[in-house]
Image 1 (cartoon, rainbow, N blue to C red):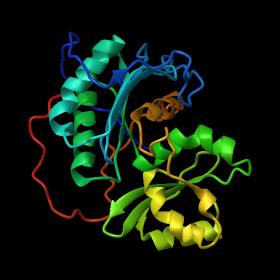
Image 2: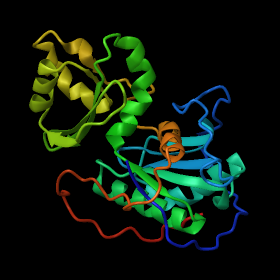
Image 3: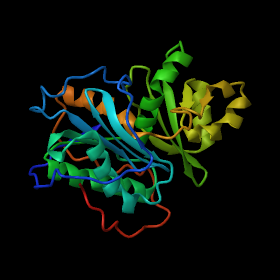
Image 4: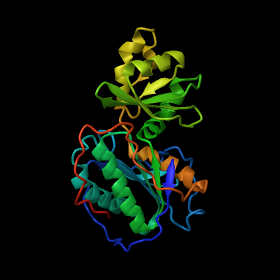
Length: 283
């Protein structure tokens, strides 16, 4: 995870209000991997984390405190992210009762995914963090997939072989990243499904994410189709920003703030170079 702390803060209004569709409160009993991490000791009373993902086919955001997700939204269609992200996040913060100055960090996926989606999410996160005067925490979309699937993977794989997170990269490729059972990430890569399947034959692990379906026929030829769990995480195989909350809090609690800003992770050149996103405001 790459982390940056803005050098200055802009004044922003904490009086925010916007209705958010497809938003639901987090279950107070639901924890997302942090075990109730106490982060206010590190960031002087700031206890909230805002998480964003716009990289791979969906738009999601969540706000959490001490490992508990208090508000979130998930939109399966990411095409309107550029126009809707700012009002959606404003409404999310109003729903959670969190002002920008209360944010201990903004966590965001930095790719891989769609070229435009990666740029939108990172740009928005940097602007909001600069305004709020808090760090930006960047992690890969594949790490987010693995984090969301972790509980189900632990139950399904008693041998603790870890996971291979998989995203359909189109053009005959998949984005993959191995995450060990202890959570340590390997290097992400863009490879053919055949290469990814061969790696799983040599080093079995559960393949998670909707893109893992592309590996099923290849693994079935080796009697290993049961390694494919394209329904994980959350029954749809898509990353969900709510799963960033616990990961971000653990990094904050470890004092891992400062350093270089998170940079986009594309893994390959875009099919076409779109114009820079415009008209995206931060709360």
